[in-house]
Length: 228
Ligand code: AMP
Image (cartoon, rainbow, N blue to C red; front, top):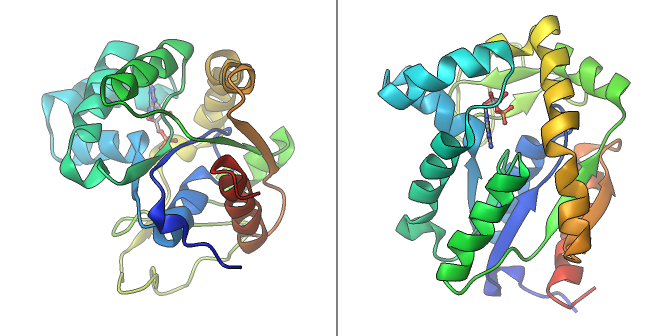
């Protein structure tokens, strides 16, 4: 029996190191489930392109591969979650990245009488992460990511109707890549135990094709709503 997962409210938190495939999987899940995909990194990059005070503040941290301070990041994501397009649920990609951010998220959701429904953790070996980040191209138009697993189209992005230019993210340079993985291990990896202890973690190998990982994700989500 095929169950329409769009009938469910989804509070999905994607956990994984930089290069694990969170952004790619979030786009696919968003289409499959009909809920919004929120990437904290994209929110920062939009603020940087728009020259906002938040963007100016965030840029120095992002360029170094450091985390933007919790109070700034939490405020930005809280504002985004309060918008009407989040009412049906959301897929968070890149947030939370620290335990205080995870606590803040739980508090916001509790005040709305909602909760995180599942936290898929996309596991990928460090050597493969570096390889992927080194070959990563991002679309300026829709944010789609191309790289080691899917060669970039030579004439720009061709996702659906997007025809955006492909570029290399400035923080994908070798020095910043290493720093971001270090920061992940120190600040974000503790979230694996955090969500495991709440019975919300679903560990998924991210070392398969994009389509295979997507199927594993959908199985994990089905399980989280009691259909697994
Ligand atoms: P991403 O696009 O998720 O790789 O994020 C790019 C950069 O934005 C990160 O390296 C951080 O500098 C910053 N950033 C994104 N999300 C967060 C977060 N939840 N907390 C702190 N900094 C973040």
